[in-house]
Length: 283
DNA sequence: TCTCAGGGGCGAT
DNA sequence: ATCGCCCCTGAG
Image (cartoon, rainbow, N blue to C red; front, side, top):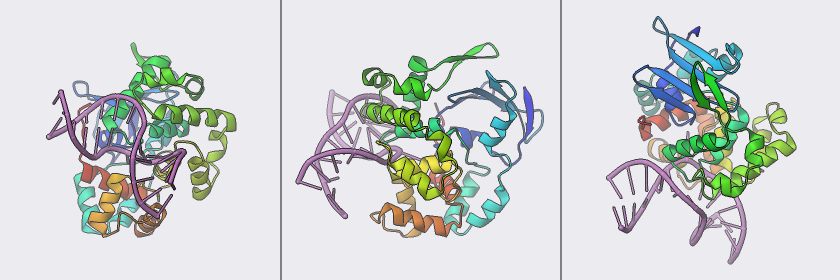
């Protein structure tokens, strides 16, 4: 495995929190195992503090992927200084020190969060793993088989009945529709050069993608650090901590947090989300 | 066994 | 702009 220096980085809260559904932790080996559409990933503690061992499969030693995914070059201290503006976010940072925001693959992030609509995190994780079993390919990770997240093409070409076997209910038609649009319009090749607003328009034009899911993709995949998804928890945070009216239009609430946290609302939102929700770390 | 909410979005009104 | 509905799971 490969060694990486990774200071000020809490892998546990970052990988097993609400921003990614593709990681599992083995308490006996202290190892994290993840899957994406293209890779299986193993991460475990390194020989010294602030270090990790990692490996990718089937393409081994994919350092570019790891560094981008974990955002190792992100200016973490500067971000913390910027968002530490009040007692609430300071308490959240103290509760979850070294929590990070990942940069995940675009199509997989979009498809995953389409499944999040009116769903709970444990159920989403379960459905995705069912989907991996039924539609995903298998990769060998040093002797253990890992199922990958299904390709966009496979999802697009799978019947709704089969998709529903993964217990996603009414989201099946959205999942398939989005997968088909990704293929047909080759969105992945264009989305990365768009501005925040243009990317949001492109995303919300997809059937099954509204403001909230679009914002999840903007922060968790496209790197718009000023965007935070205003779900039921986000609105509770704004209501309870920041005296905002939760019935305010989504776009106005978004503008408010964007300005308040000066470009890092996505990170502030992540701290506050985990803080108010509390992590449910058992499977 | 039952209820209710869950990291929403769509379509009808 | 509001509102019922969607399919199923997890938690109490």
